[in-house]
Length: 141
Image (cartoon, rainbow, N blue to C red; front, top):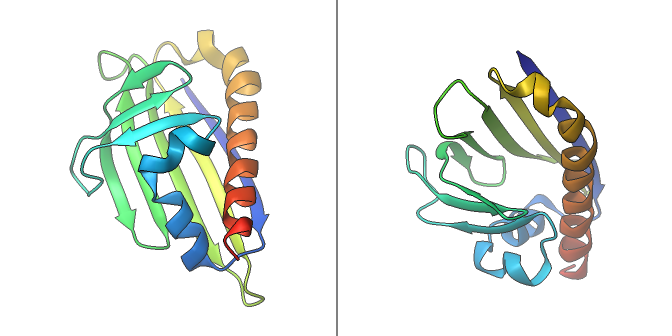
């Protein structure tokens, strides 16, 4: 079973400012309402430590392109049970703003049982997180 969540927001700051705010992972506990921490060497192929709403896991980084994208793949205990490909994408606009796309592709046998939570709590968490990134980035301008 597969399920996809995609949210986006326009941020009134250039992509350099948004990326800088986004990648200051050590400051997440101060302002981030959804992702409490990202620790480790954030580089392609590396495993990092993530805490989201009390859940801790160690996904592998699939993409880390400056001012463009961070994507990781995480699994709940065994691969194929409940896997998530989580992406943050940054698109610079000609008017100096940035479109931030926050999405996740879920797959695995537990997805049907988690669908209600994914459609409500997780989508709400993504949107809340997007808003806080927007606010924090716009304060830097």
